[in-house]
Image 1 (cartoon, rainbow, N blue to C red):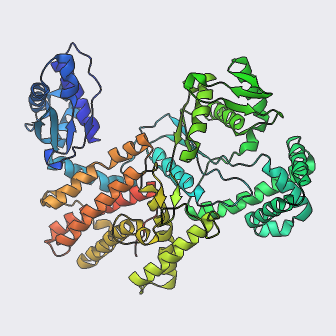
Image 2: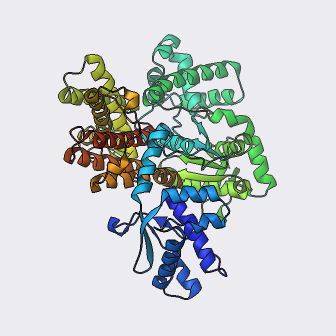
Length: 602
């Protein structure tokens, strides 16, 4: 990646110029004002204090040294000094910089050469769906905890963000070479099952549940609470059913396993529609036998104490309220289970990092959980991070729900998006067959839901504005999917025009013919894609990829609308088609990282 290459050069040069100082942290980034260059570094300003010199003077010294070593003369002393003649020759061929300038108060700005931009286009065409990938995460393991619905309850729109953001992060980290483990930590244990088991025993119908699992279980749960209004004894009877379950009563365990199995079958349908995959589905029940050891270890390490019969972890050290890990009646809590989960993931998966993709509302809880883990000494081996996100709102800015105030089922949101997408597709391209319309509507509808979420900063609340989500103009999934389909159509027309096989379309295009500024701007933007992916992982923010591909598509559409492609001279047309292919490849790779499919035809 270019920013890393520039950083290596600066490290070497600063080390040669100022041998007696330790090089401080500095950045190589994209300037806010593009006219300054393609990349910029603040290294002179972070050195100024150490050297007691004017940063502009330092910038000039560094710039002059770069021009001697790896500058426009192409005489590369840097690599030869390291004894790597082959790499030196490679660097000469690259000719990385065409211009280096200095700007107040001490920035060093770099303009990347056209030769290097052309070389990157060749790399995109060669790497295809691997363009942007790396081995950054080699030998590192990340566990991502996402989705996590409560068994026997419908997945609602509130589960959408955890599920979609979690899957996208999974894709991104895997693309960067990490070993990624996706774990759906379902809520399959606890007091709610006592109520459900009681309801199933007295009013349940196994055949109905098998046919419509979640719907029928929800009816049983609702009926139980309605019956409680006139018969308070049911609460105590439900508690007894819970106790029997925890004591591994055969009948209750059998009913519980049936309810869990049927619930997961229902969830699986939604996950398959959304393209969501997990490596493990380890619910709370999986950790039940480990909870005693958690309480024991907390006591042995003297981080827990009794409080009115309950057991707590004191977190005064972190200015946090105490963390309750066992109730007065001896029952365990989510907290106990989550501590056991950390320990298991550390020991079993050898996790270097665990990401919890859970809403903002749980921020305090995760502070308590992570602090308790730190007191136990577990955080020395594994880094824990809460990936927060905001709420899902309706078009009026209020929490998305039905007219009766009930939370909308995720399945209903998916159906509505696909139905609305079909109407849009029929308006845009009525000539498509019914089968094609159905396929396009599904891809566009699902893409719209995902992109609406992932194109926005995850910390903010997101709004469901259906017209905006399904628009073929502006920052939306259909806009990007159409940009990809348009390029695919353009390539087919090029093939037909010159009667070529698909394989010959990119046979040694002459990128020297791409001389227009609009073409070079696209080429410069393409250069940044691998860096955007790494930034997205570093900040756990898929929206950075979404923003990048939207900007790329916008640049390309301006090029498409203003520049003759098929009507240009044949060799120029070939180069422009190859540039178009590079854009399509990058759009596809970016959308795929967000879990969004592209279409060859729309």
